[in-house]
Image (cartoon, rainbow, N blue to C red; front, side, top):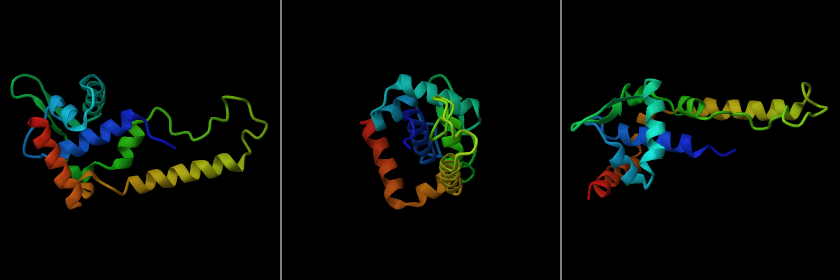
Length: 146
């Protein structure tokens, strides 16, 4: 299983934003820090704001900041929000004679659920408790501003 770039970018935006609770960060800054297109980020930020994870403001002093504390934002909920589908196999795409009674489908669904349960035990704040991660996020900002 591989998460989409959409989800990857959403997690990066939130992690970066969580690293700067004292100020708003701009899309330009985040795009520069990660080497991501602002157009790609615009869609991600819009969705995160629409679902209450980011507050955004336009204008000269605009930017974005977390709408909720980093201690309340769980990685798994972001994955679930951003991914269009979390199905590991699509039994209905090509009709399978095992459909409805397949132990493989159940096993994969259980594995996916365990994966999400694990990610839902991890918050943005916990990710930033790692000094190497927090330091790297801070250095990205210095690079993006330079």
